[in-house]
Length: 180
Image: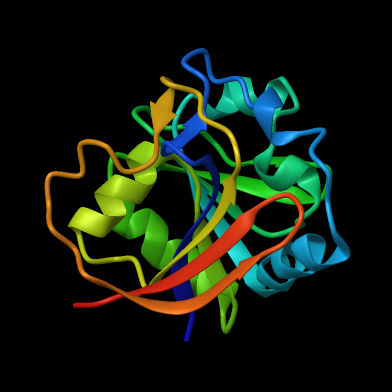
């Protein structure tokens, strides 16, 4: 059975991107092989991705989930009907206004793999609906001061159980189970 996870790189002050969506702060940090191994372990398990809207523009601009490293089905939330798009071996399926349907379709596509939820809005919606099994965070040692938050505005108390914590050269890696 698929497991649905929030997988994000974020700043110590809780942002996943700058206010304009920029993520340059993620790159150019010293790295250790152990950091890469933690991330690769997660990537190896991902069998599908659910992401946010304005997707056709994102796909056309080449800003695809995980930089195209994962050749897994991607389900994108949108407000209008759109035919699936196939690009570079990845099929993008558009789901209109029903995040639970998108997650269910992604879980079916993932099989025994994990479904990765990308974006703050998607993550918060799925947490509110009780669709998230685990949270995997790679926390970069930087403070942006403002930007696009991962959890701000969740509006709900959710208990977590720590499963794993590690820290190496570039990031602190946190893994939690969502308690229901």
